[in-house]
Image 1 (cartoon, rainbow, N blue to C red):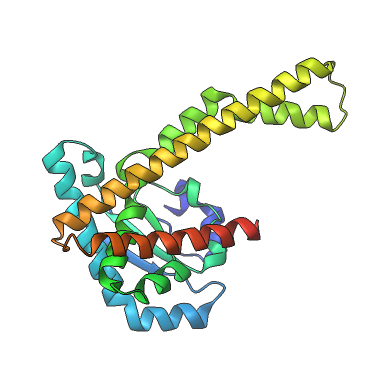
Image 2: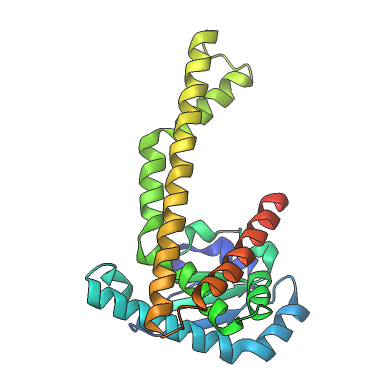
Length: 238
């Protein structure tokens, strides 16, 4: 896999191989100690069996969901690689990792394990992170971004604002800006739709794992709160 093309992640993460098990249903868990070795080592020592068991349970439930519904059967062709990473590393190359690689931040993991229903919250978190691959969200986002012209409009508007030699009048400039904003709004709407779909998939996984319905909302709230806090940290750090 090193030769297949994830050198940035592998170099940043201390040479850890960013791969996916070829055996269907197999789950591999890696704990990356690149920038916070003491914290990650402590979490691994205490929670490695718990995370591995939860990841295997989610993978099995998701495969059963795909088999029963006929949707998302591509997730049954290979395994999963769950990578626990320090919060500062999660945004590195998450969008460019291969299908089946799931990133869990130490922050989100700790938040789930400290919640009222830690086991259920952890299951929800992992299932929610697996859901984008199950639903093929990444591919849809790439297609929508290209066909919306989002990147083109932003790049062209940026060129104009840098006073490069681009012959364009004020009216056209405003039109381009409006088009870019409209494309951005549509893309944001798509992301919100994907978030709702991930919620539905995670809830379906917990149902298959026989989590009491009364615990699902609490588990979802804890997991999503952890993700929202992480998103704020990642956004601030960029």
